[in-house]
Length: 164
Figure 1 (cartoon, helix red, strand yellow):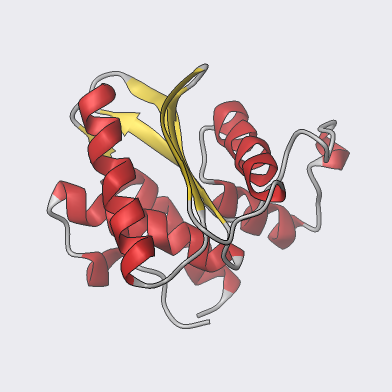
Figure 2: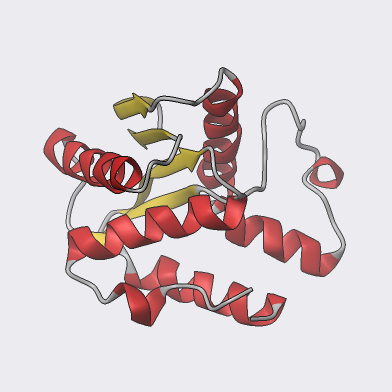
């Protein structure tokens, strides 16, 4: 799948994967769903679910490193600033031949790499994000999308990215 197709599919994911609310129970459900998927597949990831400014779920699975929470922080800063998935933002920048640094953001605080996805609440807007770090960026992104689809009863095969 090409860059344009991925960007269009990510925009569709962002439009379609909306939560009815984001409270501690919903964050726990999403976080534990991601944790179960990762453990079933033997993945070493950090998982973070938050309302902006308030962590609601965090897990660091075996094999992660101190770098992973930093990637989570930097990717989630992109979602907080742009209200777009960090992977979608990265692909858009790539398409335009731009970087976050050129937009005035420090690479120490922002990373437009896959794995952080906006949590859009119906009738409220984007209030937080879910972030995974530890896999190649496309895989981080897709793990989040798969978990959101499962939680919302959506068909993951209809929303997932195509082959690279």
